[in-house]
Length: 435
Image 1 (cartoon, rainbow, N blue to C red):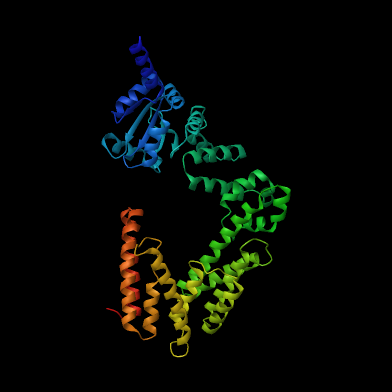
Image 2: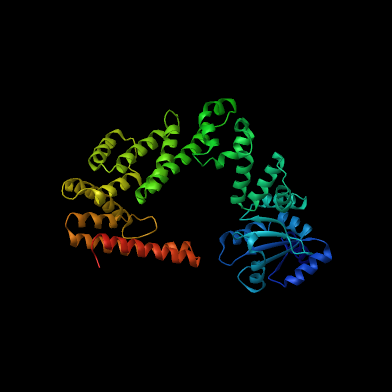
């Protein structure tokens, strides 16, 4: 009796878990699904994928998941880098943005009916797959959308399916196209504003200007958290200001600079008088950058000194160091040597602190300002120190390349990474007369 009970218990456990045809013949999977008149549930995984292992260990063995999947699908799973998985990956790669990806496939024509991307908790997975069984699939919503339907109900359903499919690029386009086709005052509708808020990232758009102008009304009339809106507004404005600073630092082309000037004027109109946290600092950055663009080193030095007291801008990772680098590289050696020396000392101290913190370990985020230090020492006549800094810059850059290539394994990306490295090194050597 004991052995019989144990056997029944084990059988029950096995049945309650998801039953997979793992790395078996694809033809056998299709035939079984056609015979049983069921859809195919395919788990696409790889041996190195952590979230895939999480699904296998924590989700698929759960009784409620097993009961749902076993009752509704013929379940299979394939390592996409082995056996028939390689063929299936090539066949369905446009629908596999990453791992894990779970596909619902019609066995008759092998078309994708629905998909769920990424590690998904049991209840969420069951809900998403039930939507697919009920006809609320990505394919259905996409077909209706492409046929020209634009009801709010469809947009919401389509976006929900795109979330499950982890297709944020398409979702953003769908939301943008929908909201931007509506009158501006439709953003006074709470549901539409909350739908659009994650994509309020273009400081030059009419929607951005409308939200900024009506910030108080949106807060009090719609009862929306002002902090959430201001965070979006500040982030978009910060990106726009950073673009202007970076482009004007990198380019001297008259047309490019004129284009940036026009953009800057638009931003200043939005910044002035707007009571959004961080806007004062962004306005100050544009003012400082204006002085830099005029090439007035003495005035730039003076305003940076005043900024230390006023603290209109923070001594952050990029903005102030970019101003220091500009002064070091472009101040007149004959008449402004002391100014060069001052900012070179600041950059050297900043690098020393970073070196001490990193304790010799170089990563993608390790400070490497040795290029500008090399230029500064060269301009002050210390060629030996300049070449030492250039060699340190080169050594650190090479160490960073290792991490960069691990992140971007695509062959074209790796070639681009190498090209950028050679360009930076060659430019630096040319500036300091180093062979």
